[in-house]
Every structure is written in structure tokens, then in C-alpha cells.
Amino acid sequence: MHGLDFRLRAMVGGVFALLIVASIIGHILKLRTKSDKGREVVQNLNARIRAWWVMAIIFFVAIAIGRIASLLLFAAVSFLALREYITLTPTQRGDHRALFWAFFVITPLQYLLIGIRWYGLFSIFIPVYAYLLVPIRNVIAGDCREFLARTSKIQWGLMVCVYFVSYAPALLSLKIQGYQGESGELLFFLVAVVQFSDVLQYVFGKCFGRHPIAPEVSPNKTVEGFVGGLSSAVLVGTLLWWITPFTPWQAANMSLIIALMGFWGGLVMSAIKRDRGVKDYGTSIPGHGGIMDRIDSLCFAAPIFFHLTRYYFT
Amino acid sequence: MIAELLAKSIRLFSGVQARWIGCRPDSTQRVYFANHTSNLDFLVLWSILPREARRTVRPVAASDYWQKGRIRFFLANFVFRGVLIERQKVTRSNNPLTALVAILKAGESLIIFPEGGRTTDPEMKPFKSGLYYLGRAMPTVDLVPVYIDNASRILPKGEFLPIPLLCSVIVGKPIRVQPAESKNAFLIRARTAVENCSRT
Image 1 (cartoon, chains in turn green, orange):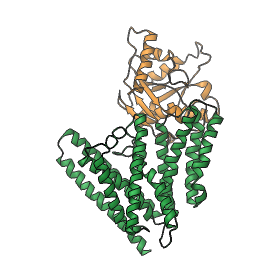
Image 2: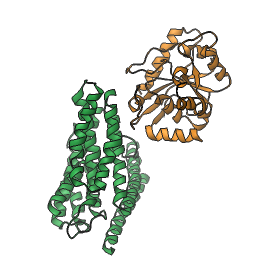
Image 3: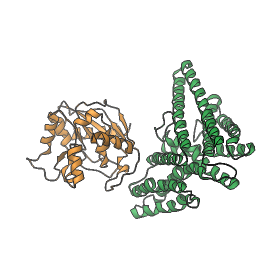
Image 4: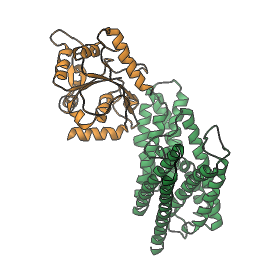
């Protein structure tokens, strides 16, 4: 037990030390910046840092309490993300009942299945059962206009906001030989690498960004941000090898995959925003936008990381 | 107490974002008029008003709908203190305007939906003339256009289970009936004012 406590304390200490440094830098920048445009960027930066404090504290409290608390936290995240996603998606009258199922039956059931560790069902529940339920409920409602488009939008929402996100707390149910699960290290590893990658892409992009990497989709993402962010995320992930069941080399590879999937996740979810003509999914996290804006990269990284870990290490 | 809790839970469930673009959120006497697509419309508009304003604001609702069933009756009469008006058989003796003007004279505010019922179209229906007569009877009271967005997706007409999407309420710039303005011209101007809120 002592080993686990030490790891948890080290993770909390490390993150809070970084946040203190970030807050100090943010404060210095605030005092130094004079131009109006610069002020705006710094204000947004400081709002982001403050929000990071809140998110880090909530995350650590959930991990420290245990598996059920983490599951409930991610269930809430899924619910709120789905809410933002559907609000932005032009669903019709005829989708109402299907959406009711999505919010109040499918989402809780998915997390319940993870809670009772029923891997065989939770890993296919949404891709098979919910996937079929949505068009069936919609066809009963009887509205055929744009049937395929409407149905797939709901299916997508469930996959991205609920199914993919739920893989993150599902890590807590993995039984890895010679490694004590349930203490949240793997979950921390995933979230840390994904979010470091996001943050450092932003930092490198703001400091050195010259060449947009996907100008059509996300004008703020640059080649410099991509390279700097990904390599630092891999570095951070490798240095965290000792909290995982991986060797340093394996940890580096896992981090690279996580960061790459995260990058693509962010890009794909940006494309949806762009198509709908909005900048953010919501306004619930000051400085960041909505919940979906914060977890877009996690959505894509979590299932791949889960399955790789499960396949090679259990 | 019940009202305060209810307002909080409505705000939480509907994730409502209020934007006051044309006037300040205070308890000034006003007639709020809004588009109507969902039974939630009144609730979300009511929930974003400041606490003091909620005490003196009364929704105007159709008695044929709100007199049905005990829960509806209780909510309409005791929680929201609705002004139930007859929309089917209006006679000289039950003319709803008399009651509404009396409420305004007593210093209270009103929430009305001048389309006369919930619409399922994306476009608003033409406004009924009640708003004009109210504005003329009480020329010093501000008539405030309000656009309620997305409430119909949370609870469409004909559904009874709401889904937790986010909605927003945009409160526009007050208007008044101009001295020489005709009924039609005013009603069109009022309807446009609500539409303009939706475009900001």
C-alpha cells in the first residue's frame, strides 16, 4: 500500500508544482504585457490555468476516492459532452425519443457495465446494441426526412462522447499481472499524456508557431506546435514509466500513440465545430470553451490505449 | 422557497444562457413578449429573471390548457401565479385585456406569448393583437422582446419527457406603441424585434 500512496502523492505533487509554476508565469505575463491583443491572450491563458487547477483537483479527488468515484466523474463528463454535442447538432422533432434513450438509458448503462466489469458487453454495447436501437426508435417515430444523417449524428454522439470516453475509467478495471490496478496510475498516465500534449502544442504553437498544419480545419494548430507538443508529451510519458506496467521504451511508444490519436481527435472534433460555424462546443470551462473542447483528444486516445494495454499486458 | 428551488433546477437542467442585450436584468415593470415553441418557454424565461423580478412577474396563459389536471392547476395558480385567460370564447364580460391591464396598473409585470399558442414551425406565427392593446392602455410600460432558443428541442410540443440540451434566452431592447402607430404596423414591428434578438 505504501508504494501506491507514494505514487499518488508524487503525481499530485508533480501536477500541482507545474500548476504553481504556470500560475506564476501567467501572473508575470499579466504584469508585463502592454498591448491590447497580448492582454487578451494572457487573460485567456490565465483563465485556462485557473480552470486547470479546478479540473486537476476534481480529477485527483475522484482518483483518490477510488474506481466508483472515477466512473461517476467520467459518466458526468460524458453526459455533459453529449449535451454540448447534441445541442450543436441539428436534430429534429423525430429524434426526441431516441435522444431521451441516449441521455438517460444508454449513457448510464454503459458506465454501469464498466462498473460491474462486464468487458464482453461494455465493449460492444454502444457499437452494436445502442447503434441498432437509435434507428429503430427513430423509425418508430416515423419521420423519414434525412433519416440516415439524423440517425448517424446521434450514433456518432454516443460513440464519441460516451463510448470512447468511458474507456478512460475502464482502465481501472484492467487486471495486469504483477501490477496493482485500481489506483488510477494508468488513468493518470493517459490523461496526463493527452493533456500535456494538448497544452504543449498550444504553448509551442503560441511561442514558435509559423506554419499552419491544417489551415482549413484549425488555424491555430501549427507544425511547430505539433512537433514540439508531441515530442514533449512523449518525453513526459517516458519519464512517467515508473507509475505504469511499461518499460521506458514501451511507455515512450504508448505516449506517442496517445499523443497522435489525441491530435487527430482534436482535429476531427474541430472539423465538426467548423462545419457548424462555432468556435467552441460550449462555455462551461472558462478559457477552454466547453467540456467537449477539453476532452476531444481524450476521446480518440482512450480506446486505443485501453485495447493496446489490454492486448499486450493482461 | 419552492419558486427559488424550481428556478435553480430549471437553470441547471436547461443549462440556460441569458443574454440581456437591450436592457438590464432588474425588477422594472415590463411586459416580456416572446416566441413560443415549448411548454418550457415560460419556465426558462421566468428562471433567468432576477429574484425580485420573479416575485412580481405573472405569465399569461391559456385557461383551457392550464385548468386541466391538478398539477397544472397547482403550478399555474400557486407557484407561477399565472393569469389564465380564455382563448376560445371571448366575450365582453371575460375580455382578458381587462384583467391584464388591472395587473399592470397594480405595478406587476407580465410574460406573454403573442403568437397565441405553441408553434412547430421554425418561423413565428403572426402576433395576436393583445400586445398592441396592452401597449396602448399602458403607454409608459416597456414592452420587451425576448427570443427563446432551443427550448423546443428540450421539450417539443406533444412530448412529455424533456432531454437535457442547452438553451438560451436573449432579451432585447424595449419598445412602446408609438402615438400614431397602426395596430398592424406595431405588431409587425414587435415580431421583427423578437426576430432580431434571434439573429444576434
